[in-house]
Image (tube, rainbow, N blue to C red; front, side, top):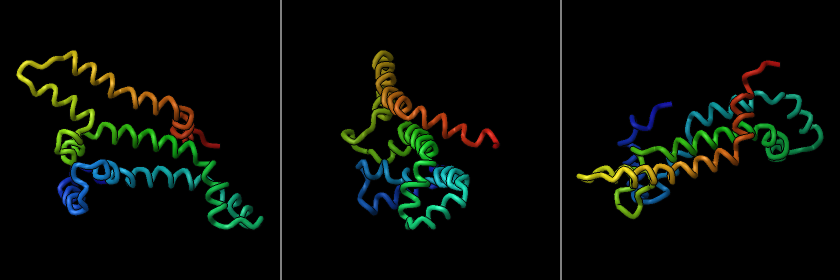
Length: 160
């Protein structure tokens, strides 16, 4: 649960040793397995009754089948909510994108929009147009996963 800003120097050294500086791998992979996602999905998996798992094992299902066909459909709202939250966090992660994408051909949209303001006479129309274009992918992802997001966020709100 340590913020990335605290571990940015050792994380950069690891990514540099792997040769992922100025690449999409260096921007994406450090954000895939985050502690928040582990804790969030653990809560969803803990809500599944043990009797459901035991019944499927008694019916002859192996561990992979129990996970894939029984447990995964039950936790789909949690996975959808985690996907949206992680996507928004990674999409707006300005500092990490600025550090990893050092060449101009690898810079992301957010870093490119921020560089528009570095001129002596900045054009605010370009910056606002860029902000609208940068918001479109987040709106599309939320639109596609909205039902999972609302179910996932409100899943623990009501006790049965």
